[in-house]
Length: 163
Image (cartoon, rainbow, N blue to C red; front, side):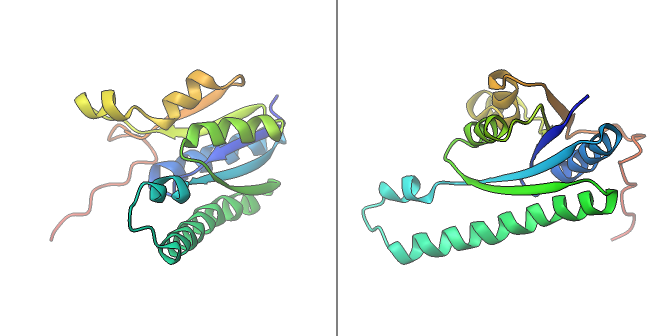
């Protein structure tokens, strides 16, 4: 069915749950997976600053790269535990959805598995969501896992009592 699944991650718990489900699917299909994290393009963000400090840019990029490697280590570990072939990519783009779609095309992926965060009201109108942008622009299927889960969902852990 699917031969190569792209799995974007932002390191969130919801993203990790989507990756776990995507890896289960990959195992069932005999697919390989590629995990991707998109770092912000600090050159564009800092280019507008009048007090541009190259050392600050370098530090911000290094911190973002370290976070990306940690996020992608989860993908690699989960894939290894399931016996699924895995590769990872750290991309840089000020529009994460472009990097996700471009990577899917460059690597001949035939499915994108990701999470979708629910936003309410004005925030959803202003910010939208990367997952929605990927869904509307991708030329391949996109499997979305909702970030909100019902209380009786098997992945939902019981709230901790006391405090």
